[in-house]
Image 1 (tube, rainbow, N blue to C red):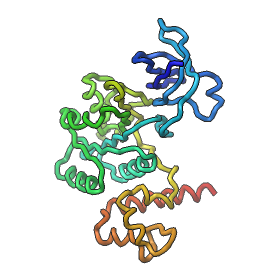
Image 2: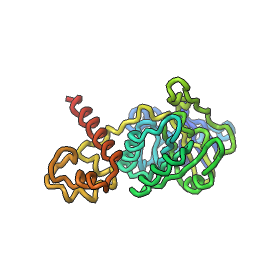
Image 3: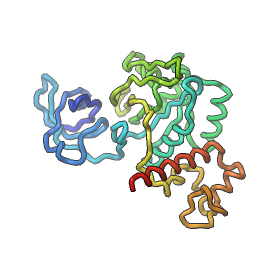
Image 4: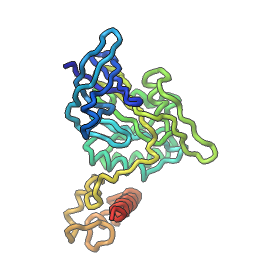
Length: 291
């Protein structure tokens, strides 16, 4: 059976790339009865129905390397976390949630600082490169930083994530030199992005290189992570965990906590530690609500 990659899904009509051609596909009824339904990014086995009309059916879904529930997408290799350092104001709590989730999924994250306020951008870049993350600075509407960004897109399936209005669509349009995605607009009243992308779609740059534009992450959450394990996904924390006195330390209130001592000695940034505490408490509250 010919294999292909699902590049879009609108109302359960799938576009599948098979041998560099796009086929319109329906999924076999048996797949709908199974727990794993087809999603963008899946590698699938197909049966060609009509080669002239480019029609086929999806017969089976091959094993996924990873899967995001929101937005629904699979088999990605990079999360491109686009942040605006001017307007809308950068949300470092959101960024730290996204970074923790990327660590949880074992997906490489890359931070893109767009609309650069030089002083603020340099401070953020220093903080996150010291942790070990790649940071790229861009000005999307001037195509600045694009060449550096494109280096990281080769031979990857990259998801562009971030709230609407931060410049995701502009960056993607500049990469393709075409207006392939709708442009988000910033509300002057509340300075928050208005969401324009309503579904996930993979765009092919070249062989084995794809990028995805996704719905805004205004409702992004990481409740798949257990609160006790959250510190593991703040990767600069883990080296200090061995210095904690108590097993099961939350790294928030306990005495003789190695992570807290590292924070107090400025080995962990105040913003990162405070965001860890906020996310931990959110996860704890969510767990308590289950009962």
